[in-house]
Image 1: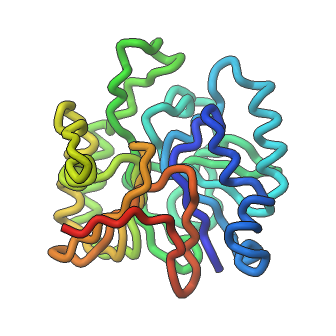
Image 2 (image 1 turned 90 degrees about the vertical axis):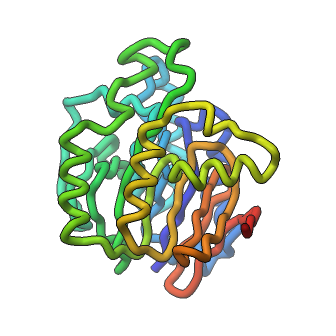
Image 3 (image 1 turned 45 degrees about the vertical axis):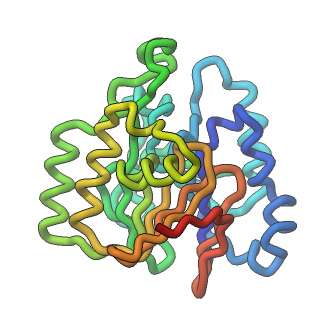
Length: 260
């Protein structure tokens, strides 16, 4: 059984839906592979429940409902769900609870930061969050939320977990570890991530040193890159636009590959 993975969605604000419709996915992965998809995981900035976009979101849900699999979102930084305390948390049988945004047709929920989920016989460590560098231009609790960063309790609970359990199949986050972010941008002459103090990227760096996994998936940077780190024997896949497909035997992903 397969899992579809994609980068930031932003409630389709930038046309991201074009890569995720039923027709596009069938064209990309063929009918046989499409029928095997059981979950779609968005790697942060799903952007659902955005203030003032209720009617447009109805149309988005209608398009997503043509696909017959649930959607699970990693928490990004541009997430209205961060400011909601009224949404139900439920157990859907994949480990930790999820926060439900849309109950059916399509089912859509957010995964919790710092929790372990078992999805399609794979063990995932789920992280999330990132620095909003455009915070100054946003309105608190309308388009920016203070808890884009982890709470002290979340961090403490995670590292307590990692003392007992540090082997995972995959990691799902929004931004990547700081050193990997820097490598990807330096590959084309930029130093962008190094100009900002992103506590989440630094947290991911600390987590990266404590765990074993096959591969790390993230989004945030609106780039498609793959970095193969031979020192730790795992890859770091950044996604945006074109989705990836994790099948029982392989990962089909768009890769602008960097080896250093």
